Image (cartoon, rainbow, N blue to C red; front, side):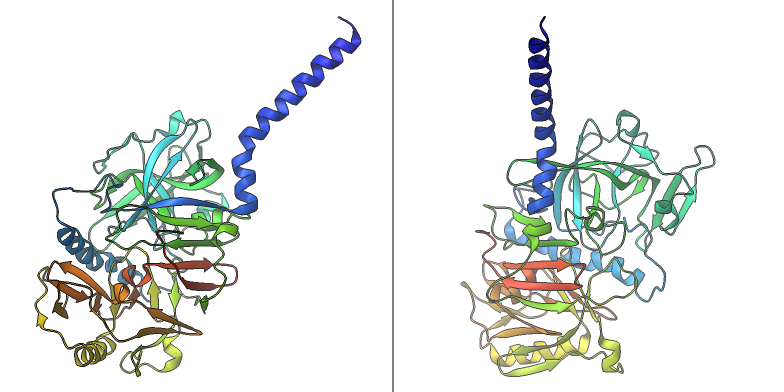
Length: 442
């Protein structure tokens, strides 16, 4: 073969190799420049494995409302802690799932998309104690990219409540919770693959994950574990580095919209901008997992109600409410809740009835959507004007109820209040932004 023929063969082989590599690298390149978007699946939607077609919409809503009170144990157990969060992996029935894969070859997993957790974890085989799981179990020894983290590594040392395996000398995590739930396993790195809404698979190597082989968790929807979207260092948002740029956003559909999926965006895709955007500071508090905002008050029509824990000074009200996508109801301190109830009762001239689900306090008899006075939530630097669907929910064919409840010692801005808003988190600028949006069309 002549030298020219050999050179042509080498050139063709090189071009072919570059083409192949570019195919494999394309998803990550796309994600790094434009960010990416994935589907969020509400656990009660037809797209969810936990969907129960035998339940009426009212029954599904009642279950979601009750889960709010299970969920708060997560936040109450951490309140006042001055330490960094433990690997925050205990489920309190988060409301949204996302599909992803872990390992090489990839093993499909369904995780709770949790803004109240940091560590991303999945159940692993061999399993000493595990909850029921529909999907295949992840087997770490079958993944060529799975790497156990040594005890002396920074990733292990920065996580509290870690121990060292006496046999393998690798990092172990453990976490327990007030409701008796727990998880135990090893800390490792592996490749996480997410499917974007464009149909591209986006893979991220060397993500710190928890491999749980002893788990007592209250999962009932086919979940394999949790995808941590909290504010701590182990959060997936932080680990995506320059790809996410510390930014993510979501747009939550109305609970009655079963035709689409809510969306979760990362990086440049997650920037919230344009007409109608308002932003409020994220307040740095312990644990850093949770997203603390400062609620100044709530206006109903022209009447303004101030947020004020009894006996607290205004200085202590910085970071007085947690915004959480995994809690259905908005929970307010008793004095603010009582004032809100009083003003709404005075303004809405409909027949009051008991809640058929037995969960909520203020309900009205109505066969159609009700008209309410303007309700505006005043965060520090951001006035968020709510629609009726953010304040009242239909719990039966004849009843609509206020989607707010009283709670001692904690306040949570829940997901009903966030429906049809684009809600963006910027962990670098330390802000949360709100923009009214039709999430079914976004």
